[in-house]
Image 1: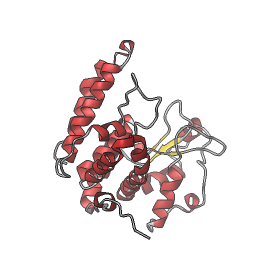
Image 2: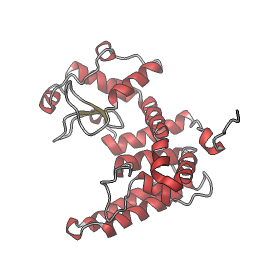
Image 3: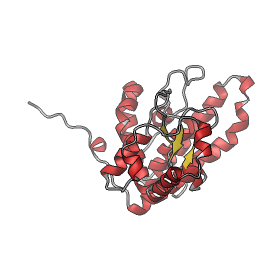
Image 4: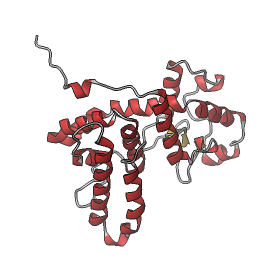
Length: 252
């Protein structure tokens, strides 16, 4: 039997320093929760699930299903596997104990939500590692969706993972504009998510990967605006979008 080896860039998963992980986590926390402890437990208007932690991990009540993947129970398992001490009530609880947004808000200062905020504020680094792990595990989906450019996409992901700035760029962009894998998220047949940015990137090396990501993400959003229905008036958002994209290329 002949062993088929993956390219070296797919086999390596560089480990960031603890300081780098903390910086990535704090920036995610700032962008998703305004950097506040209170923002670590939220339930947005019109949604049927709680959003918890720096990555707004989803937790559905019993009997509730939705279009988004439930991620908070997986985070709890991840934390437990890494030796984090969990509140006794949380360790064995599968479903979100608050059945509605109203119930969740009414109990915002109750002991269980205080427990959650304490836990989540103390595990920013572990949550960051969890997000990075999930993104790496999703790589085959991006390779497959990219078709003939699958190897390029995988290489760009690997180069971005080699730096704190690159990891943050991918994570923040997915939170910002999505994965780009849903064929319904298109204007004139063209998407604007992480897949499209990775495909558009021309990345010579890891050191320049964040800057290449910044440039490609701005191009993809400019293309989105150009392709968008005029009545949506998306041009008014482009300046803010561009600023967010350009930040990916700045020193981390």
